[in-house]
Amino acid sequence: MFCGFKIELTDLILYSKLRVNDKLKWVHKHDGDGIVLPWSQAKFKNLKFSIHENGRIQITGSLHKFWNNGDHNYNDFNVANLKKCIEDLQDMFDINPYTARLSNLEYGVNLVVPFQVSNFIKSIFCYRFKGFNLSNNGSFFGKYLDMAHYKIKIYDKGKQFHRSENILRIEKCIKKMEILSSEPLYLVDLLNPKIQRKCFDQILKVFDNILFNETLKINALTVPEKKNYELVANESCRWLLFDKSKSVVANVKKRSETKRKYIDIISKYGREQYRPLIVLLMVNKFISLTKNGDISTVSKEDKKGDISTYLIHQPNVPLYAALY
Image 1: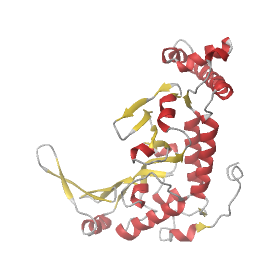
Image 2: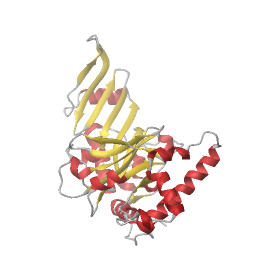
Image 3: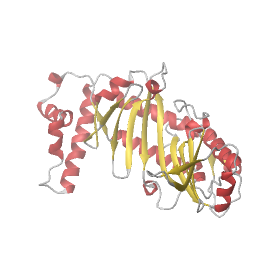
Image 4: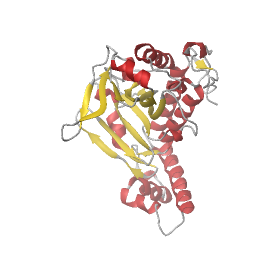
């Protein structure tokens, strides 16, 4: 479920250790005039290490790709895989997961679906009534939208990696960790089931706020239904839902009611029935990714604890019993 990330810490001793780590080949950064900067960078299996002479350390990249030796992230990445990645970072580079603070995080799901992903992406109108940007550069086909504190992406993961399967990727990239917690979050917190569940709930909420079209007979709609349908499907009409002459509350209420009615119309008349299928696949995927283990509450004071100590087996549970 977790993929892209950024961790930061300041540690002069760790800086010195990373400097001489034989897995990292350091390159000095230069400014536009060729002057050597106090930053150095190195790459290892899709991870980028940046270190400053004052002991500041940043690591960015994809945990999912790191687990796949830096090659790809089209397959599943479960809790056990995540735990192994964190342990590898600790063993290979002496990165303490209890002090490595998260400053960015990307989470989402890869879904193998029984329909052409490109057709579904083309059918997408908006997220919270704001239109998406289309990205189609050959191997990548999808839509994205930048919000103030996060980014939404939905794209064809199968096409990206030339896979025969139809793989739909839905993800949220947060720029501020406060979206997940008012308290600082560290690398080890990704193993916390409460954080995992919160991330999944946010992905579900993202999908709930994405509106898309389906094949339907317009003539079958009643006059009020057709009016509501056009309000969403027609981009020029969609701006009527952001009436500056009305209060924020009135606008939110109108958009909420329009969204509900539109989803009801698609549910009633749509041929593909994308929404219930994708939600079911998302729930199943979350359970399959997290059923291998769970962790008890860990005190941040216990800096020397072995991660494996906190993983406890959880029995399999029915589909919705695990979530509700």
